Length: 255
Ligand code: KIV
Image (cartoon, rainbow, N blue to C red; front, side):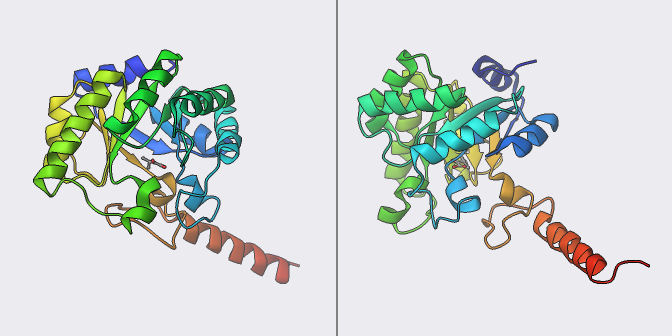
């Protein structure tokens, strides 16, 4: 059955944990869908794990559309969303235009980073009929100005700001909110205080769901693994060993 934003909201209401992963192309979207993951995201993390950029800030709308189209061709049962990339939602007008481009490419929701400062964009996107997912805590599109990936919520002022941002996003119509690198007690409190699901990444076990970059989970990007990820496979090693075996076989064909 096709997963919708209502399905995701109902999972929170039932206390069922929501598994979410990133997917950037047709085969991975198909595999993750066949594995039963209900929520898939064409994240702008593709900038690092697919395109070789140092962070997400160089990712363009054209690159996002290209990958959303590829993922959407898998026609997943999962709800498939996409990130609005850096500087693509600076104004209400360009937020709505770019959300529309991602929806036209096949995204069933869009995600953007930020709290109360992006409420006008959120409301306009939802009013245009495109479901919206929030993203609070460490905001990767701000990594350059913040000078790194820092945990959020340790200071009381940050704790309060996160809580108020989460409540404002939920009230304005976000159907879910990603919490990235938020201290686990604050992530737990936010999850208990808002009616829409929180999807945590590096934010402890008490979020309503968990999301990971699939390359981190599957050991497909061995040059960097975030501290909070326990890879469940070593795909990089499998690829290298398959290639080594094939090279050996063609160098010395069986007679
Ligand atoms: O870009 C991304 O993949 C993300 C998720 C990991 C939350 O924002």
